[in-house]
Length: 134
Image (tube, rainbow, N blue to C red; front, side, top):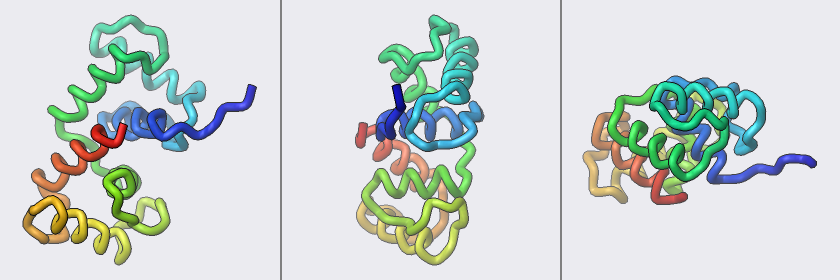
């Protein structure tokens, strides 16, 4: 059985990576590396260690993602902007002109200070948009 891209699975991967659980890619396919990251998250948060992104795990993951500081790497930021509806161009991890343009557009649409910086308010609003897109 071949696995296919799933946007909700990609969101799970984004949240896991942002919290420091390495899925070794954010391709939207739950494979062995993502399952291992889910196991680690479940163990750390005292959940049943199934390796599956069941509702209890996704809820705990969202709570942790929303409430904690995250590793806001370029790839994570670009994917969060993408899910908020603002194209950062290629998802390549580089915060260049297209990503900055998407960031400024996002900040304007969210009523945030259009600083072009990934400040706490911007990150928080990107988090809310990522979860709301689920």
